[in-house]
Length: 455
Image (cartoon, rainbow, N blue to C red):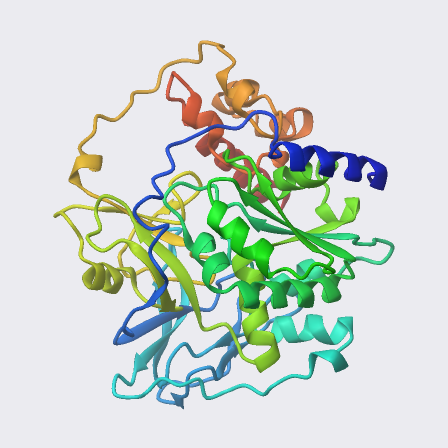
């Protein structure tokens, strides 16, 4: 574990000059269209498609039947084991079906179809206030699991599982990711400005759950208003601190922000708890601060809808399960063709169907139009060994060698000798490649092959 003296020295340097990391890239931000737009609630769609798998781990198991009426916030599926979370009804209505529905991966997966009662006032009908002072760490972690909370930054890993520290490990610092380095997305920016009290309350709950003695909120310096608002809200005697970090992609990645704020590195193939830290996204912390004291479940989230193909870009509070086509109808699609990316343009997925709904890990929808789709497709050429990908990789891997091995299908060798599994698929290498080689896509194929071969 890194020495505290090293952390303190680095902290002083960070106050003098905004902290950063080596390598990375500076893509155009495209945040000007939504960063000043306050969060608004949209109408409820007539039908909500609630996938049973909205998180890493085992899918939830339905506890409702077709034809059953449910009220908003009522549990509709239970967790199937520890690395799993329950689901709650995003609206008052009737269970219309439990069937296969399209997902962002292109597959069809089980989902609960909820017919929404449009005339209902949609008040949350489930939840009991919780006396947090009486809950120990185990009870807090259980409450977080029962809320259905997962990482809202896009990772969708069950939050309670991340906070249960393995025996023998000690967490001294909770890191809170307020970087939001993906282009177009401003969800976390608005949450920090508009839900500051809930954010700090959630950080205090998470600190207790993981045993951390202090918390550091890392906010990119392109959000000075959020940094100021958060700093003003933190009491002077609080163990919570907000720090500015340099605007650079992918500053918000877990291992990168750990290095930036604490100077600690996770061993290859290791986890962040091994170096005494844990991390949550600001959206996750704010949702915990709102839901856990009320004993409620996660039924909606804030997303950014932006891009050249949308007439009313902004930040919207929408029920989980809201279909993409309903959002485009409400916000106005500007064009006759579209590519819709779920998440940011660097790490998001292009949707195979507009029936795909907003889920817990959906941080935004980026809508492109004809002007984007009609751009000439870049042709791939052989690697010229320029080293641009090596200079860009934030994990200091060698994408050039990995790409050459991928072309020869030496997938096992990529993992064994070139640390393929340390790649978190940020896309920096593909972004800078002058030969337009789809490196990150090759790496995904290699990882998938290795996982299937191991299974």
